[in-house]
Image (cartoon, rainbow, N blue to C red; front, side, top):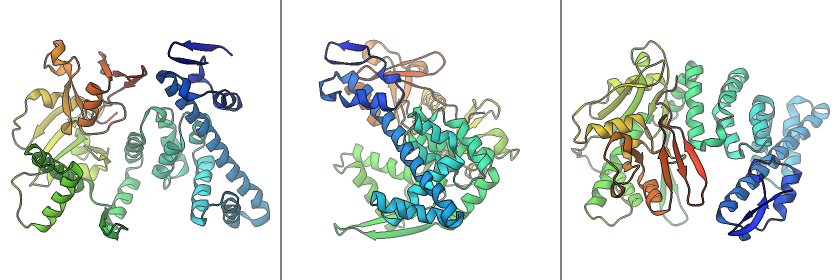
Length: 418
């Protein structure tokens, strides 16, 4: 085994970042003292441990399905799963519900989503991402679920769970629009609000299965009011402000002059009812075609920011609002080109982001659309205060370099990929 020297710490095995998970990698990692490594190499060891953890998690789920299989002959197919869950429950000291849930997930991966299981076993995805596949595709026919999973499993490792969930939902809306419509209608029919007392003597208020366009409009209005109060010198935290504003809005019968803003992306053919491709609601994710059409036609009290795209290429054709905005055309151009914050994995809508100078103003960077990119306030701070840098390539890709020297390339997706 060749070891790579590093001036700031002990050496680690060369090529460890590409090593397949298994006994050899486990042995190598077992003798590494991560606290003696350079910062750069500590990240490589973290990634190697995660690959190994995913690999052995797949082995655990395979063991669970094997226990169920051996009981089929003795208990029959109908009772084998229940009997296997009892074995797992006692062996791993789980609750009955946890054992049922884990076995069900294991069976789903092995029988319905074999390529997702293979990716977990290979360490290219983790359990969190595997569960996103399972939850998003659970109610679809096996063939459809596998077709959708196979399109995204290779990209899943580079996506956050939120990004992966949004892409899975968008694909299932495109490939099974009737099923998506039925699921949406059923969920909205079950909308409800639930209050729960907490040990601290406070209360949690939950709202479930709301129409996404109405919920997003409310959240954006709350955020706008909270930022306005902070800008006026209010010392409450943003979370405190948002919570107090929600209570004030529900208790007050007067209406604010500030109207909610909703940012919707939909292709022209869907808007004309020629197909049922999903739309994209900024800050929320994909919505079924019927909702995309509704928000383009209704909600007279809202300010709508619309992006109409070409159905074949996904490229923006035109944008518009129901009233003239005080911001320059540059912001419109940048937020149309990049729909979200461009930091790796961030899904904050570009409309709620700062516009960052790629080449900073103090270094001579000009205020042009080519030199501007949306960064949420948190990641804007990371970019300038934590040593991260980024470069924009001619094809639109953005390569970030972390403080510890690792690179991450972001490919800003089209609003509605063809």
